[in-house]
Length: 70
Image 1 (cartoon, rainbow, N blue to C red):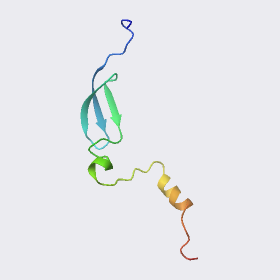
Image 2 (spheres, helix red, strand yellow):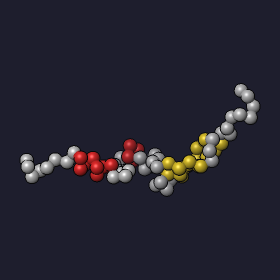
Image 3 (cartoon, rainbow, N blue to C red):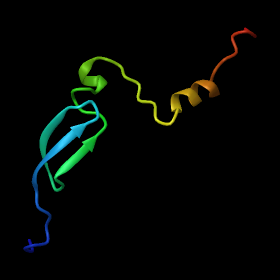
Image 4 (tube, one colour):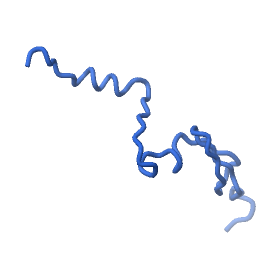
């Protein structure tokens, strides 16, 4: 390997939107994540909807069935 061309692999701090913070290793000093193992539905067993820009509402309006005509 050539010397002085590789980034420094260092201990970095990761922050989740739920407030959890943990240390990992990366080439950047701080990482911001939306979902971590403390708040992810797969690990917690709780379902949490993350609605980005109303996607769920648009989907429901697009595929909604009219119950009055049934």
